Image (cartoon, rainbow, N blue to C red; front, side):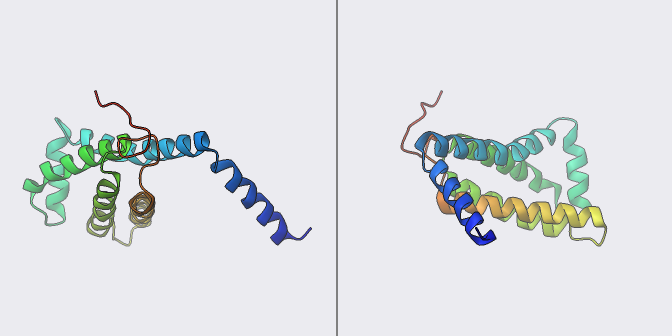
Length: 150
């Protein structure tokens, strides 16, 4: 068996596995949870004691601190929308643009750590664009299986 055939067989098995509705729904839910966590926690970290620090960081790159409430709203609101699968394509697209813009503004330096942070932002944008393309999955407020809102 050639290496190419081995990869075809493994990929075929993965396709079969993820075509099982319960597996597919579980993976989509896990993906939304994992992708949303960074935005929700980042938004909440900017509230209270973190607010002034976030404003100062924004000012350090020439942005007005008056934009911070919008950033917090996007991070928490977009993160929660992604988590619950509500208007997922819109939330994911907005968050992907936010990742790219914030990556360019805050992490475009020559420092190796900033380069890693920049690439992290681009990777997150890529994942979010996949949600933009494919949606939230069945177990979501947008999906086939409706979750009752509180």
